[in-house]
Length: 99
Image (cartoon, rainbow, N blue to C red):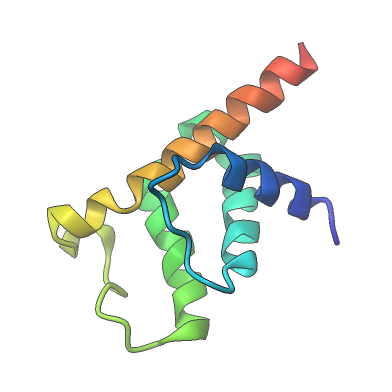
């Protein structure tokens, strides 16, 4: 366990109930934790997609969604939104905890 793991767990806890993270996504959430540290509330859906793409290349390098964010269908783009919002909420919680 590293300092990123508690942040990854915090992000998971901020996901809406309807979000269904893929099985074995611990490394993906560590990438999301990096986004949390680097961008905080400024994280975008595109940032989330880029992190997901980096992770997916290690899982299935032929996945149909391994394209730039702007080339995704609106429906596929929308699937990144709950994760971006979870990262932003985690950033808000961390900030409140510091205050």
